[in-house]
Image 1 (cartoon, rainbow, N blue to C red):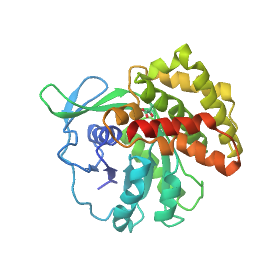
Image 2: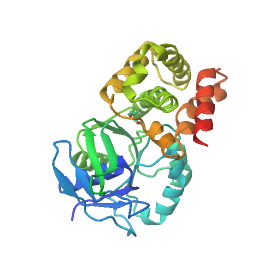
Image 3: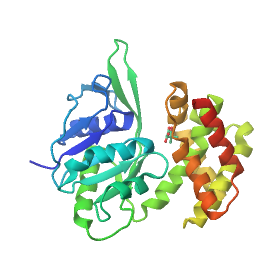
Image 4: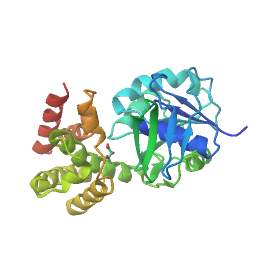
Length: 304
Ligand code: PAF
């Protein structure tokens, strides 16, 4: 039997991965926190619908060629990795897939230093909703790309990691291996640092952040982001970052960002891992980032 992809959590992206695995005949297990609320049906990007295989409850020890994907929020990662550790004795590849930064540091605290680990970011769109007869459904709303890479590029686990990337590609293509995954993650951080708090604070769709009333705010967030990213080893230009942010806002225009949805539903937001990360890094480097600092405070005030 081939490798199995194990998907933790029942969020939109995790459920999309499970649906992709099923559609492409890849052996898979999914472990939503609440099995009763997990999607039971998928609507694919071409409009076709299919029922999802039932969720799994207790995992067995994963094989070395298996892949464990954690499409969770950063603040859920520590507990999830701790809980999964006993099942990782054979060193199955672990893939972190979340908005914001800080997951790598968490994984490094829980897993051994040379553990086979991949970091990933995706621009595929998916939403979870209840259909007209109340069935929990995941809908694949936008074809994107998943970028994945090794945080250290160490050659120790190179073959295993390559096979894990190939498995991810079979599940939900396209998947692009990045020599420098950090650059992709920083860029995604910029996108989230602008779109997520603005959409949440002003109760708007992603495309509306391009309105002239937000010009100054967008520019200021990107300027502070670029200062922090560049002293942290990146080489970005603030104007280019702004263009990238606007491109994503347009491509996902009709969506409400994840932070908007978290605020609306009274859930904990990812502000600490997004703008909060910029503030934290700025502090370490002695850089003044008043705009990102204020955004963190305003979102926290909204969501508490
Ligand atoms: O967090 C989100 O909602 C997404 O990462 C993004 C790119 C902002 C699109 O909605």
